[in-house]
Length: 323
Image (cartoon, rainbow, N blue to C red; front, side):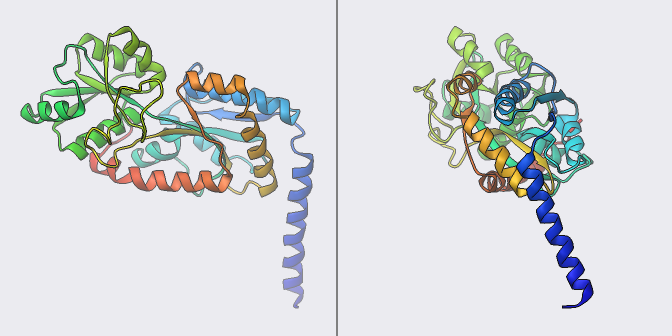
């Protein structure tokens, strides 16, 4: 073996040993969990909940840092540019890792190559809700009603590029409808627009929509999950309603910058998956309408790839552009 090859081999072994040693002592200082959205929202709540359990298990504080803006991409860029030492993590979701990278022209990071998947926390489906006075009472009736009145129906969303917007565009494309998207600043205002009759319907997170469904201020026509929701057993899925393969699940997970050492990834994955078994955390996530999904880093990475491939054509066909 030449001297150059020996030097290269020695350097590689030294790197492996240093990574191993770092993983054995990790962590030795506080960990920062970046959230690309404002305090008080679902992502922020989840980050603080999982951070508390991680702190207890790791023996070091997990500090949540909110860096909102541009569909979560500001926070994503910060983490992608950080050192891969396990001390800067991202609470990523569908917007940050799939939708925004496909809608914003320049986000400053590669959603695949720029990160290391650590742990999937859970998924959330949406509900199609409509104004109670809106005549259709099923997806079939809604499709027929919309086709008989092209370009007259409006649906709201929490904003351009948000999951409810993407679901609406998927519905529009799959059903062949001419309907208009009306973006609002948040899920709450989008639902209020339905209640007030400013728009006819919208897709929204169950945690936000369920209280209104129970009060009767809106009616639920379908859910976007593959199976019916236990909380809405009488509401059919979009698939049951005549749209094959129409399923949409928003997700939330923890990722780190690219190049994060495997031993640190394994440690964090184990701690997070163990935290997801906590009855207290499970109850809180259930209240947020999150279906807990404990996965390996590899399975989480495969999930991200599948969802990106599935949603890319929908987003491109809709010519969705981030603001």
